[in-house]
Image (cartoon, rainbow, N blue to C red; front, side):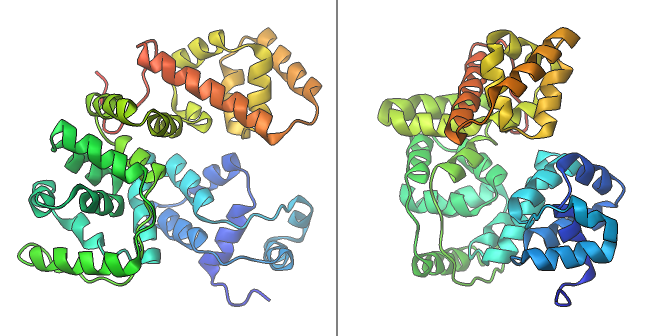
Length: 335
């Protein structure tokens, strides 16, 4: 029985069964508030049995049972749909609110401080402590704090973030109490126990919100210090799915550098949206050739598809570094 789910949660289950294009079309018909409420429900859905999902779909309409594929919802689906509906910036803010509510981040109150206040608050802290703090802030705020630091200091901090292990809830609780007392004249913030997760992903999230000069300076110096870590960060900063964000000119330039067979392998494991994006930038003859190549491939290992996608993503990063295309970064504006 699914009577424990409310109406919004049941709607989220239905939405999770749709492909991205249909789900996005549905979201476009809703108000911003309705979308946020629906995504909040989706991001926190409990794990459901197949029979429970079938029951919900049957309630919607008996004939949809034949179309059912069991999607559990979850944060990744909510994130993808939010980005398509609101754009990266607004989606990230909403997702952070979800995470903050779910994880009871004890340092969440720091997000309400102005960036100069944050800078003063952590100015005398050890780089490892600063690294922990930045992983708990919204990435765009962490990026601003990082940009205000000296070059040497920020390279040290990004290195520590990317190589950080999990910080215990006890340490996080103590740190939150110290900072809360220090910032008492600025903000009143509560906190509950939660651990801090460091690693490459939070480092990437922060660097993705810095300006290009800051990013290149940090990665350049980090490469001298720890080449493997720098490459891991670069590999995460632009991935194959991010090709959807490129303009048509950039897509056409990329396809001139990618052999048809390699592109077909990469697209074998891609979403329909990405396939359509490539086909829209090919001539009719080339698009037909690509479809034929896809049909001829047959079953392939996931690792082969992933390797092809990674190779294309790396080539895109190289084109960006050479100035042949421009990847959107943080708050970049174009004139």
